[in-house]
Structures are given as C-alpha cells and as structure tokens.
Length: 147
Length: 147
Length: 147
Image 1: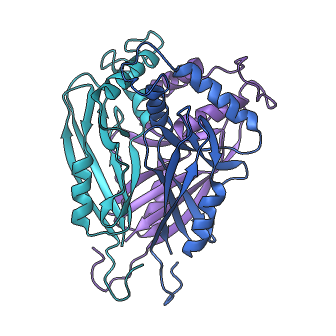
Image 2: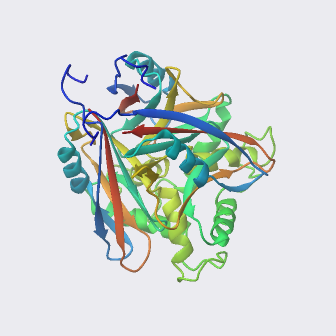
Image 3: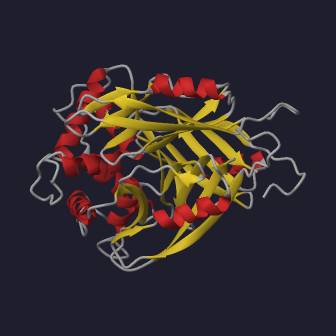
C-alpha cells in the first residue's frame, strides 16, 4: 500500500474559519478538498471537526437548495426556539435549541480519501450548519490520516 | 506497539455494495469484519462510509428484530412521509424524509480494531438503513487505519 | 511531519470503565485527555467508542449544568419512556427508548489531537450519556492515531 520505499505522510492537520451569517448552511466541501489535496495523502480518511457547541457538521444533498430549507423547517418544529421547557436561555430563545441541534447533527465526521481525493458520492456535500440566529466565526479543523 | 522492525500496514481501503429491498435494515457487520481481517491491521480503527444522502449507517442492538421495527415506527412518526411542510418532493413522499433520516443517522462511523478484529460489544451490529421505499444499490467504503 | 528520523507512534489503544448512576451524563474529557497524553501522539485524532446499545457519546456545552437538564427533558419528550408504540420492552419502559437515544446520539466520535492534546473548543466537553434508568458499567475504548 505504501509503495515500497516511498515516504508515507501519516498525518496532516490544518483548518479554516467559516464566517456564518446566522442560522443556515455553509458548504465547505471545497475547503476540505483543498486541504486533502495539499496533504499529499492518497489513501486514508479526512476527519473534520468544529470546536463549538452551537453549530454542527453534516453531509447533505448538494443539488437542490430546498432540501436545506426543508431541513431547517423540520428542525425548527422538533426543537422550537423559545420552548418554555428550556431553562438555559441566557443568550436568547435560540440558545438551548442551538445546543440540541449541535448534538443531533454532531461536530465530527470523517470522509474516506482515495486516489488523493475525497470519496464523496455525486450528491454529497459537506456543510457547516449554523444554529444561532446571529453570525459567528466557526473554526473547522481537518486532520488527514493515511499514506 | 508496532512490534519493532515489523512492517506497519498503515491503511487499507476497500468496499462492497448493499442491494436493499426498500426501506429497512441490512446488517453489514460480517462484510466489515472480513475487510478488517483482510487488511492485516491488528490495532486501529475501521471507518465505514456510505456515499449517499438517503440511507444511513448505524450501530444497533442485533438480537431482537423488534428493535429495528420500533426504530422504523418511531422514525416514521418523527419524520413523516408526505409531510406538507416539505417542498423537496420530486421523487415522491419519501424523498425529503429520506434525506432527514440520513442526516439524523449519519453516513460515517468508526469502530475500533483490536487483536485484528472489530471491537464491537456483544449486542452491537453494524447496519445500513435504507430510507427510500424502493430498492437501491448502496456503496459502502471501509478504510482500516492502524498497525 | 514525522520530524525526520524520530519514531512515529502510529496507534495506541486503551480504555476505561464508566460506572453510571442511571440516566444522566458522566463527563469523560479528562479520562480521554489522559490517554491522549500517555499515547505520545502529537498530531492526529482520538477516536472514542462505547461498546453498548443503550448509552451514547456526545460533545456538549460544559459550563452550565442546565444544558444537560434541558437536553434530558427534550429527549424524554421526543422519545418517551413506555410509549405504547414500542414492542421491545422486555427490560422495562426505558428499554426501547434507550436504544433509540443511543442511535440518535451515536456511540463513536473523534476529536483532533494537536500539540499532544485534544483540540476541543473552550466550551466543549466529552460526555457519556446513560440512557437506562438503572446504573450500568460502560466500557469506553480510545484509539489514538497519529505521529
């Protein structure tokens, strides 16, 4: 797998910042793909992580924007802003819902790398989902492991 | 850990196709376990990924089939087919629900490898969950990293 | 990345047991951090896994305990104990809800390692979430991959 005496670049870690405009989706597929290409790793995984508790990462259909609209509406029904059940509301009605949405979606995902590229399906895109209503700066770390 | 001068097989990537019969669960534990065994990796992780946006991967109780039945019924209540809230319905009433179910379940998971085997718990099985009502061919990629 | 001739410790796998007191959260950030430090890995990932089907792992806000209280109340509303829809109830009204909660939260997560430490955000903690009402012994496996 390592091609005999060729050097094996085991791990490369890098990152970028996503400036969100409040609740909604930012596609980061290209940002992650560029870090994979720069790593020189041909076969392995790209682990993507965001160091926050009120946004999440996901892999979503990338062709029809109405998919993300429907997803937002569904989430707003299941985890409503300002729900009187929530006691943690110091930062506003979207505070606790943002934490729950972040946990449901997750802040960590991995994508296989093959032939030096992300092996995503045709209709898959990687997105950062901002769950707060106000804009935020979100840090994303990409760790590429492999040879 | 690497056993001195022994060669370290860093990464092995392979895959298989799951032919689903429409909405429901296909156990893939054995398929993943065989790729782990073939990789020669003794200690590390197996990262499992499916390159689609309308099915998902999960680790579920593997003894009582009624668990999967209950899971399907619960999901159908929380994300109902044909919900008038959804605008993305070009492929039918299960189109948008399949995307939401895929995101809730996730398309990427990792299992530790130890002693050359998947270190799953006694009651854990790895499943692909088809969310479309019609049968599909689903690609699964397994990347084994370790020594 | 590997610092020339320096040895590269590719993988380290270890674990610990969490004695839960029934439904609720146990923070395991320090336990995971200690295994990362002991591994000697400077750059890579820590993959955390629990070998059960009725608890889950999550990254959650670590400052205000009311976040976890709200999360528990929200989950109890969405996946109610004793729901008559559930057929799998041999171990009690919390049996099937625990499986669904486990699947929603997931039993596998990965955190980047940089500078020899977990690269968590300021407000992120790693938690094991017990979903059964009775206390359990939960096994957690941490696999650190990198150099």
